[in-house]
Picture 1 (cartoon, rainbow, N blue to C red):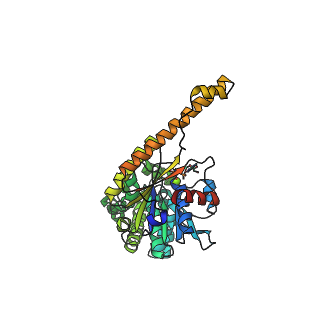
Picture 2: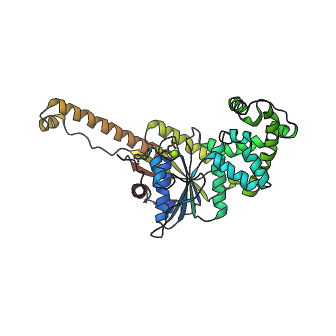
Picture 3: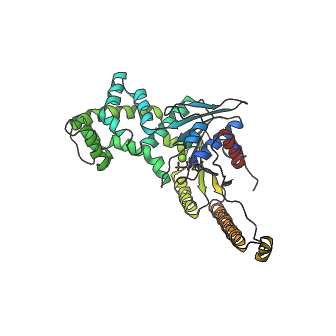
Length: 360
Ligand SMILES: Nc1ncnc2c1ncn2[C@@H]1O[C@H](COP(=O)(O)OP(=O)(O)OP(=O)(O)O)[C@@H](O)[C@H]1O
Ligand SMILES: [Mg+2]
């Protein structure tokens, strides 16, 4: 197969989701892809979730507030922006932008219930990510939006989260409460532990009345947001959206990644490419043991070298098997590899080099 660079693979995408098992390098690859695409002349924004401190520093995000677009690179004709997401903060923006009046927005934002739940609503971060991406799409200032995703065991959890928040608002129990002030334990689908934590935080009695008023106002805000935002699911399933699946070569991650591939394509997403990250270098077969013994006078040293060599070779073989497994399960997909670096790539020059290694 003719090698394809990222520019060929993602050229007709406006949004690329970077997904994969936990800890495999999604955030790192999102940043590296962002730099690479920007170096090819596209106006790019990377939406990151929970980057390591050093990576946040490299992108100039360590003092930014959640959702705020920060210019990362603006030279040599490059245009790379980034932002960091925090579920609760983006919810605040949704409230400000979509409440019927500024007074209503402030009332919601000051509500003890909102303060206690916005951060913990199941799916809040995912909803916020989708919302922020929708705003970026509407603003039209970038040719490519790269969305890093949080670690989830199930790829669809992330994509379905906005729907779960929406169901929460549409939930007949919540509607009833908004109208009458009655409460049932399962209301809001918050789960009883969150509900009881919330009750503890704000202290019982007054809660029920407050919750009814809050729900009425908050539901209006989310309705308005949805009305304006259009159908995000439609964007995900359109040709404008592609997926970069990141995994490592460990058998566990490869199995999980294969599961993701099935789930994502069943959902209707277009998977463009896979990155096998942190792969170990190929190691040729060891020379005969006698040669090693001859070369190294100290037999215990020869033993250690022999064991280390066998270990490295086993890792390399495992990597090779993983590459074959993922390639055969994804026939028409591009599979890129990235080697394991001694120093994690977390400065701009390192990320740029890392991006060129994978996507160039
Ligand atoms: N090729 C590589 N070589 C060495 N270190 C790497 C490589 N890729 C990523 N790392 C390091 O591995 C760690 C995990 O990477 P990263 O945070 O990008 O993963 P993630 O998939 O986003 O994790 P999470 O699922 O927790 O969000 C980081 O410390 C990162 O610097
Ligand atoms: Mg991450």
